[in-house]
Length: 139
Image 1 (cartoon, rainbow, N blue to C red):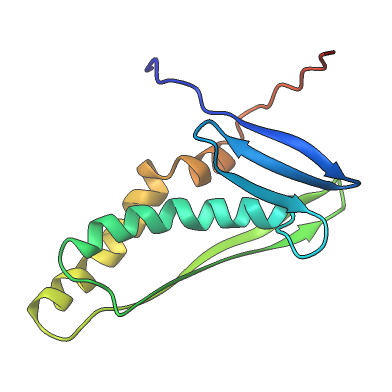
Image 2 (cartoon, one colour; image 1 turned 135 degrees about the vertical axis):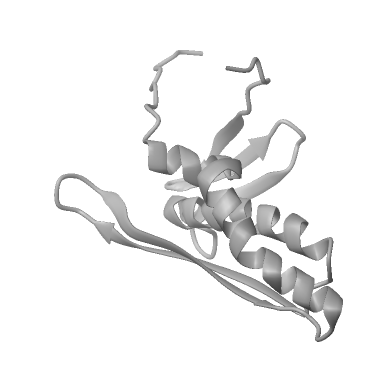
């Protein structure tokens, strides 16, 4: 067990079902409302982005990708309470021809496996089913 510093994001209400999320570095993203990501879409983006970062680092050391696209998908299920099922992360990667591209292509499957089994905090947390504490506080 490590004593790694905690991470947090705050949400501020902008309107009915519309919020601004702010991280500790001051970056913001609007959530909900017209034209913004929904919370479920942000979950899918986080799952895909976490693994994308791992795979990008492990493959781009060998060659710069010509195409690097990641699709995160799932299906909302309501039976037994709202939750997502059939979560999937699909990689569409293309590297240049030649020895460096060959090396990068050879790293794709091991990189995805390492991310899934060990490195991606987001997908591992979802798969492990970490409990969430809900705290109600006043001003």
